[in-house]
Length: 329
Image 1 (cartoon, rainbow, N blue to C red):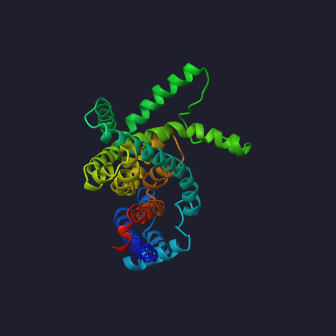
Image 2 (tube, rainbow, N blue to C red):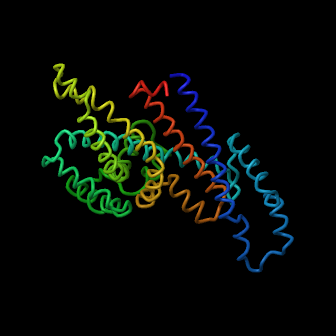
Image 3 (tube, helix red, strand yellow):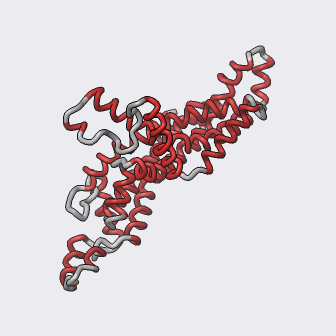
């Protein structure tokens, strides 16, 4: 198990280095740090642009620029925004906000996917299976922004009106200025109330696709020889499904969830816009792409790549837990 983990960790480091190179190459080809000066009236003299290129290192060749950026990132320096503030401070503050949303969404989506997938496989072609299939395909077909808007405009308003008070919040990740005078449970209970609708929006859209994978994997397991052997040895059907079937059926879902982290980051961008969360998604759109700030976009893409690689590493290690034979591969 130790050598298996070491090999996967080393492989993940190499993949992350390759990802950082591609991220830098993509941004270097797409963004011009001096573009905001081109439209100024009167236009700055050419000497100004030459000095800026020298100051920003744009006169260096591509590999020197990449090396300077990478060594800075390894020490926690993601550069500065166009306003002169450190990118790292803003990025990791926003990361904490987005992590709450994605973490809660993944937990809920995985639990629902396992439960619904197993029930759909065990009750194949029964009314409950058709019902879950209909719901899953309906959620898969819904655009993220539209589903989030439906929850915001109808579910939140309906529940708040029915209860006669506001229990579901539709704007922000916490009540404005609450952090200035509140702490402990008061602050976190408020954050949980703001977390409900964005989490449901992101979790249900992910759960819909994941539940179909879990159902298909469970159907393959239920028809295998070792499941029939377990039943022939006298184990009850429920014990056979839970102890022998579910563990093996979780392996494909583990892969799908690990690969779906990148999709969740993309979905979080839209969800944060709809619910006005000051997370990484809004930071990318407003401070990065909207302001044509290459350091912000570089930081966002690299952090996203780190999480994708990290979750794939966790998935590899979970394979060895779910199926001990993988430890020797």
